[in-house]
Amino acid sequence: MAETLFEELKRYVDFGPADEQALRSLHELSQAHFSEIAHVFYTRILEHEGARKALAGESQVGHLKVTLRGWMEQLLKGPWDESYYQLRCRIGRMHVRIALPQHYMFGAMNHLRQEFNRIIDEHYLTQPEALRVTRVALGKILDIELAIMLHTYREDLLAQQARSERLSTFGQLVGSIGHELRNPLGVIETSLFILKGRPLATDERALKHLDRIGEQVSLANRIVTDLLDMIRDRPLKREPLRLEEVWKDALTSVPLPAGVSLRVEGLGELPSLQGDPGQMRQVFVNLMENAMHAVGEQGTVSLVASTGPDAVELVLEDSGPGVSDTIRRRMFEPLMTTKARGIGLGLPLVKRILERHGGSIAYAPREGSGARFVLKLPLPPSSPQVTA
Image 1 (cartoon, helix red, strand yellow):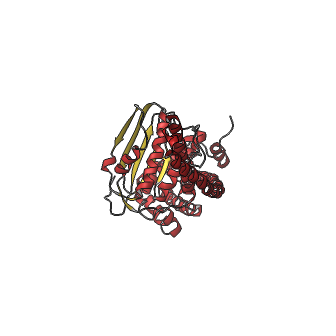
Image 2: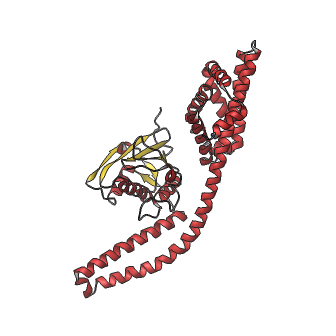
Image 3: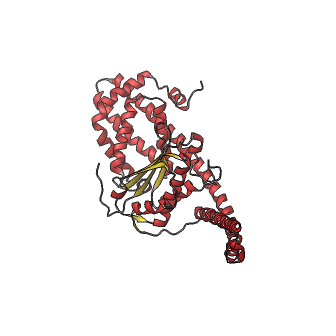
């Protein structure tokens, strides 16, 4: 079996069982200092305006300190396996998503190194060999950490740039074609209106075909609208937003098969947000249409809502087949679809609308079968906060 990148990194720095044992011993010595170290870490980071902006100021620092303590726990306790590597990769990808320049991470990692070395010096002052071994082990694992973060950061940054270039080309093409299609569609709609008022419309078969033409023209118009919405910044209407009302309105546009059960929890308890009800309705319509397509004529769909410290969270799940790893990596890109008659605009449009509201959407696989989408929308500053 080919050597994994993580195995290569450990081999390159000669990270072995002796280093693992030294780190576990350091864990016992330093665990009581994790909160103090986390405080120093984020104090240093927030001194830099660029890092403070990427981390949304101090509003998320409480949560991030808890996350950092968990990171230190695994750093010194292990196990240092592929699951460890994958978790560290997600950190690098997170830095791309929030646009955190990596030089801040190097500086912050140096502060962690200093804090741990201070603990090592204090406890192994009279044991020079143990001091040396522990310092070397700490240096190796922190070097591996930085290597993993830089590797995944570079990979995701290049992928993000490639997506941006494709979207730019896509936008230029859509902008020209979309506006050109409006004219013939408008002519067809006008002609249909005239024909329906003529004697021809008394023929049931002819009227049926006229209605079908009208339905297809409406579908074509919606596709053009979705395409244009992907490339233009449609102004947001900032007004009070009750997600329960928007959800109920969206359901009127998505037929629910008799064999599909729908469960909704917590939506009515959400606080009022600020946003565009029309665009948020489109979010729910697109997600529900995808869910209906996934479950077919029989299955379950659930929406569970909750309020966190700084955002509301919506978890939409279905009992369909889920999404393959190949599709998952590109599911929010335009023109990526698994539907026979789809063109792949639903999820990209959902993502764009949520991000314009300051929110996000992520795919989170379920155990067994089915898909799970996690949506987050920020709470207004005056909303009551829920403490953990």
